[in-house]
Length: 97
Image (cartoon, rainbow, N blue to C red):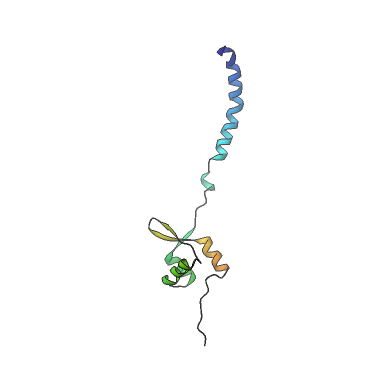
């Protein structure tokens, strides 16, 4: 009985194997597709915004900017920082004369 099914098994294997392989290849992430998160350190963000560290930490506390911790370092997402600058979330106050 098994010898009669051998040709059918080979035929189905030839049909199904390429379909399964292509599905697996599509599901696996490709190295060039991985998006690397651009980040700034606290010092770099202070230089970009032209503010001091305490002011930057006030932005974190007020919810104007999000910070991320990675291996003991505080990092800021570059896209979020640039978006905040465009939206003018970080306004420097001037003294009234």
